[in-house]
Length: 158
Image (cartoon, rainbow, N blue to C red; front, side):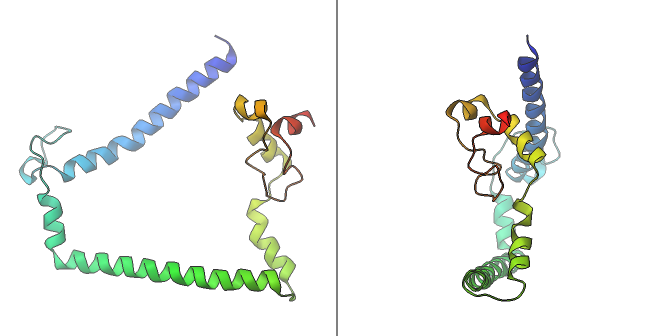
């Protein structure tokens, strides 16, 4: 077994463990929600008797319904306002000239700018299929980086 295959095996095992550790508690909680209230404390993973009584009980409570409606309303209002204000701001930044425009645009795009070592690390860890067809590296495509638009293989050679 060469180093590359061994490393891939270790990564696969590690990823599998992380996925299991992340998903099992969610599945446990979901299975508890379908259990009969008298059997919630038994040690079985799957319910012996499937029921929707827990969900009926939640939606019959007016306090939960009011909280749910309030949360949905606030989320919709916040999303609408963010889209409206963001659209107007983007239009103004694109069309108008004003002092500090460059700094504002720079601060907006600063998180997209990465150093060469970050870009190269991302491309060096790319699957072989990326380098075979020579597409652009997804880490920098369209980012304004000097590496944007060049294939990962081209960046490795430089």
